[in-house]
Length: 147
Image 1 (cartoon, rainbow, N blue to C red):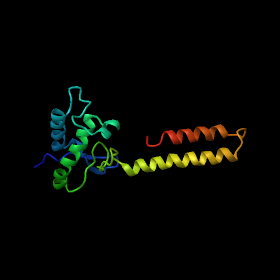
Image 2 (image 1 turned 30 degrees about the horizontal axis):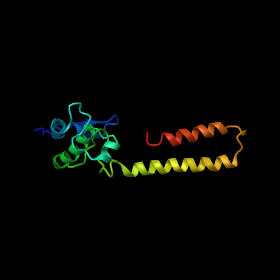
Image 3 (image 1 turned 180 degrees about the vertical axis):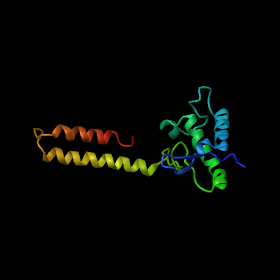
Image 4 (image 1 turned 45 degrees about the vertical axis):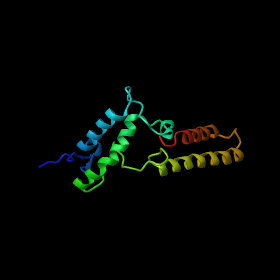
């Protein structure tokens, strides 16, 4: 007999995975969260902390995050492993950032690119071949961090 948690998929290599964002308890929770906590335009979460508003967590994001954790225990008890939600593993949000380690390493990567660009710029004359290519490379690498 299938339970409300049996939403299984196979990836292109035949591997099995479970999508938590398609489980009935999660979907039910998101629905009731949006009905009870969202404003009429569904963009604003009622009584949302200021730092989450600044980081642009809208009502859908907030309900998805809260319901992910509320339904995770129920899902884990049924299928005995941690599912992905919206293609991502569940991470605890810290200061409004859902993956703080990833964000920190992205920032450090950008800093490293900028520091190395400054060293490159002081050591290599602007008339050198490929100077502008390396300049463009640094701009793209520094600005596109985390995308």
